[in-house]
Image 1 (tube, rainbow, N blue to C red):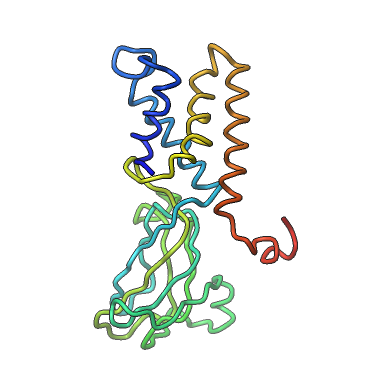
Image 2 (cartoon, rainbow, N blue to C red; image 1 turned 180 degrees about the vertical axis):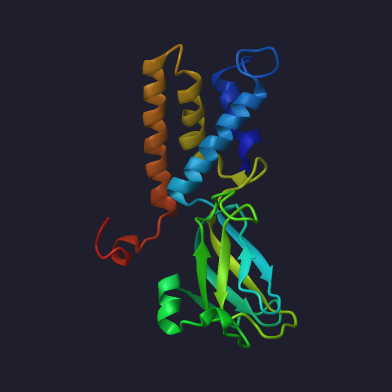
Length: 219
């Protein structure tokens, strides 16, 4: 396990000794950008990273900003004292809310029961706050120390730890496929195939064992 950028750079240096760095074939900043692009793709394809966000509830508030580190939201917990889980909010669409009550935006209660997502998690600059939002029903008419904890799959940053074998299986070939794209296109294709095969192996490790059943029998 090592930091995603530092660990992958070290592994790339064994393949490209003395070629990464200032005044060399590939600048460190360029290679770092490629590593992070590969990291985001692996996170999206394989679900390798769980992220959480605690949101302090405020009186009469429907909408809360959602961290851009989320790719998907898996579940939302309610904690009346700020630490102990008292239940889970159920995901619903805006149409579901309209069917419950045409005036659901005006409803208030002692705890939220449902949540909806506005915009896709991770998508930026689509709402005034600059990112995705989560909407709750019912907003609380009065608050003390209540929070909701949002948990899902997401992305990390340059210092996020990642298993070294995932770096070797997926990130190294991803970066190499881009570095070789101009000078050795056939080699680049081979590296990209290694990246895809690596993602398949990683996905098998992290994928939900009941995913097929949850999808109605579809793989």
